[in-house]
Length: 86
Image 1 (tube, rainbow, N blue to C red):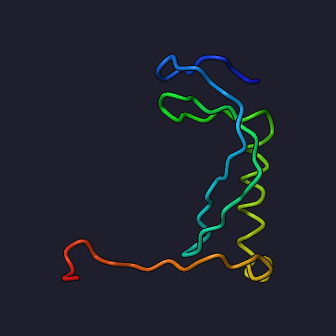
Image 2 (cartoon, rainbow, N blue to C red):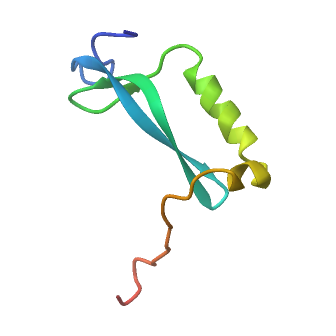
């Protein structure tokens, strides 16, 4: 465990399996099976050493459209303007 108490609110930090969302141009990639400490009160995340660098490396790698095309498509993203009639 990285920390036992949250630096933001003082809440208890528990190790959990989480997902992280990364934006690549207009696409979003969900990276699953990450282990991190998560505050049970405010949700602040604490990553083990090297995880943030690995996530940045994945993000840079996925700028290559061909690599992005190899991923499983799990949904769609739509745009709706707040002031639009719906």
